[in-house]
Length: 147
Image (cartoon, rainbow, N blue to C red):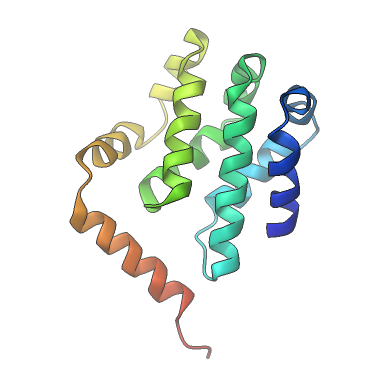
């Protein structure tokens, strides 16, 4: 999955590919699924970063913004990443949400996502204790002993 997300990330980085990729059946929902998974390995962390980065590239194309918000799983996944991640994926999720909010038609739908305001507030606060807790939690999940 990580390599597939990496391939999509590279393809989505090219402007000419962004609209056709966003219109590809099941791609946005698949990226949302990969983004919203809580990583349990380093490969999972990498997969999440790549999936969110791909969504960011797709959101940067103005013509994709309304389409992406219609796939409610995508903005919800971005909020989940913003809430539960503290690294590159969080930064990219915030940036993708900014792009999505640039379309006035999307603003009500984005505002109705459960937890978006709390997550934005937490991110703005830069609560060090929360970042440390999330980082430790991710580390423990990745390094938990096998049964």
